[in-house]
Image 1 (cartoon, rainbow, N blue to C red):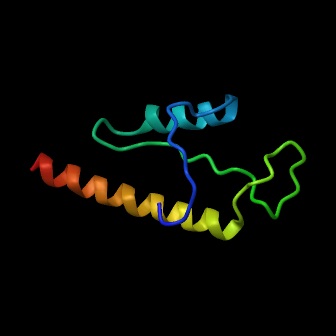
Image 2: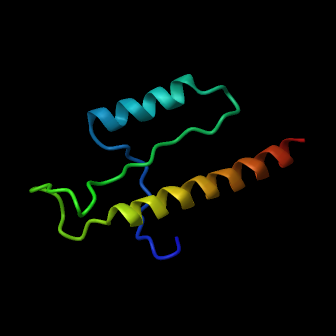
Image 3: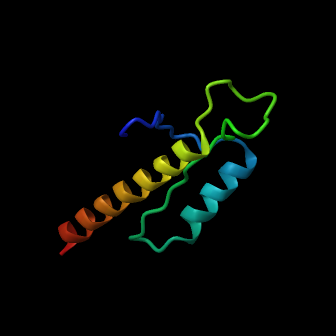
Length: 83
């Protein structure tokens, strides 16, 4: 993803993350796409137990921008295939 380090996971994380993902999937219409993007604490925020190599706010912004773009491309492709 264009200079933004990412990892794919099938685990939404701990309680709050799991609950947010569950609600998205539970409340989405049958044909809708739903997912969860976990954003770590940015490097500018003091987080004592967080890894040292965390992304900056700017990199997180680029990552979210790319994720939305990719999601739109996939959604359009699915929509065209369904017609």
